Image (tube, rainbow, N blue to C red; front, side):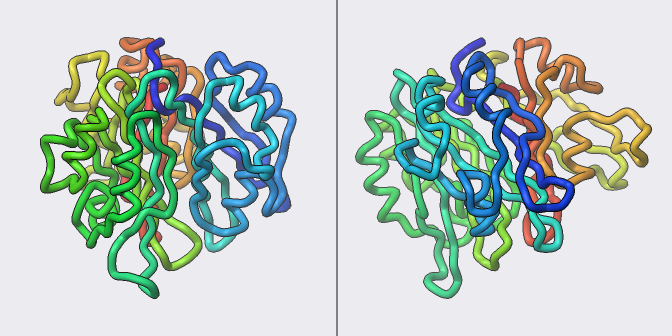
Length: 319
């Protein structure tokens, strides 16, 4: 399994009485100690990284594990994780779950995890709320802190405008869509994925994952959207470093109309509006199984994008 920037994921769902977040599913790979520790835990509102995201009602980026709020710091460092981000999901203001993604800069430089924020009370632009940057990206980090992105400008600005994910295969070749293209090229950053993230508040957030060709963001990235009948999802794009880049092969997945019908992690994420983590991606329904088997993926993460109260797509990450 090749090294990837996004290393692990865990999904914390609300308990039956809504008082706790409990681990529902995860993908920790070979990090068995970290996985065992995580499975023994639960979080109340305001406790730990998942609980903090629940409490503040918006994404939280952890640039390192030195904060006393992160209970599993030693295990995370031993697993090779460098940073993490927690994405909360709500149903009518009540917490539904929190998705936590762990990333690793590793020994290969040129990677970054960013959280961009827009608050109309302060500015009309989107600015950097927090970031975690790998070795060799100091100048890129400095310019990022001084960058103001109008709606529709830059990678985060495009995701903000569209309310959809945006994936750029070559940041340096897209200066009109990635304003920091020159600095990105100098830092060795090549690929970029931006995810618009909802919150319980009126402000907007976009998460961006940036990495070079030697450190893929994930083994494979897909975007799934509803067809005109809204009875099926169709694959809008797919990209994999292992299979020569972008794939134009068409694929569809039927959206189950009841709980007894066969479903995939991707259609389940669409139906329920919360992420799904599968540790057996080769057993999925339809095209995702073939894709997972072809690249030897150990996990599939289906992330629904909910923007302004509307579900717009599902982003699938193969780890």
